Length: 180
Image (tube, rainbow, N blue to C red; front, side, top):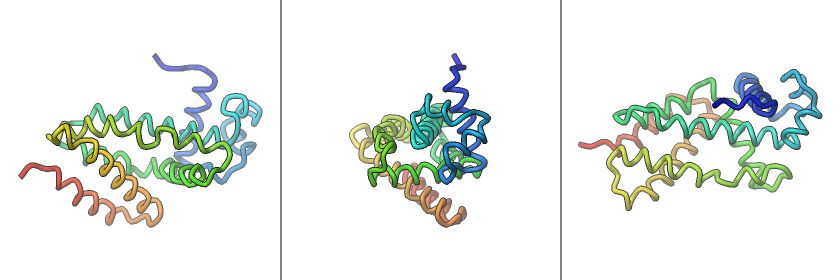
């Protein structure tokens, strides 16, 4: 069932807006105007600008994790990488790293962003690794490695914009999981 609550509608609008226009550099009032609402409504539902941005990043991450289940096992790693590096998600990826840095620095309203930022991915990545035939005992370490590689390459992409180089690096990583 789709959540049609006012908070969910605002969150969906914010995700869509930030995907196309960014948002971390905008004031809460400006974001509210962009979303066709008031800053007070955003404060009511999200507590602050940081709360809104954290909710956006968490929801985008949740949608990405959910997308892992629907991928063809034969090409899941590459298909997921294509999804993560889609130009339409670039602003969301940039927001992720901005929030990550702010949370690590203790910026008020962002520290809760770190809750589950690694752990929430481990189960879905381990399930993906099972499709690749990685032994169960090895999956936790491989899941962390895969998450670190993907995030490192995404940071590279957000920073440099060099899609060809990050794709080549990911291809090298994924090739290690293919059966000879």
